[in-house]
Length: 209
Image 1: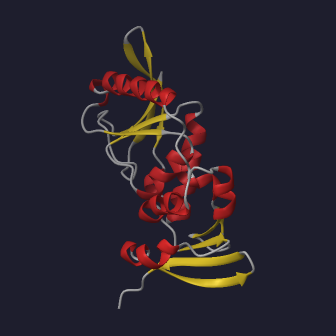
Image 2: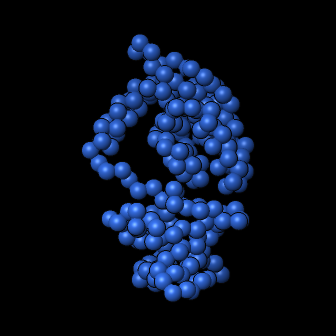
Image 3: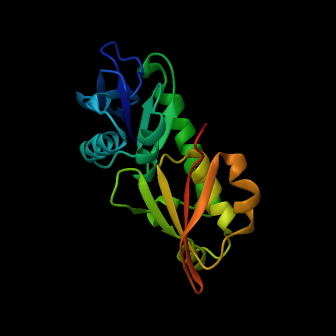
């Protein structure tokens, strides 16, 4: 098993937004050895688009590695790693003392996943808008491909955790929970297109007075 670690020069786990290194460790004969170590360039990124690009470049460098360990991977960086199929472990302390327990936890997680159906990932259905931070999603397409899901189950986790400026939702009708729940989540909506059986509802964060 290979594990990527965001670390400082003393091989202690560090934040993805701190200067340091990203190392790939592999177990060999009961010992963890560094296969490759390169500079962490994500910490220099400023703004959502730059962070997303820097993480995507890091993912390319990691090759077939799908586990990353750090003391902190917040916000859009975390979302981009997860969209790339990564498992994220947040730890503190010396890396070499932690890799065995991370491996054990990872193997247990793999075993659990084999028992459960795959979790829904909204990222594959989001379309990028013309401006940074703007996205759209066709909720009818999502529910057609995932008939066990409701619009509420699809959207609320993303609204709570997603980072966006504007989300255009294409739907056949306005879900009732938009009226009752969106405000409580800190969002408001407006209808920007109203065609028969096809509406576009724009969701944005509420403006504070």
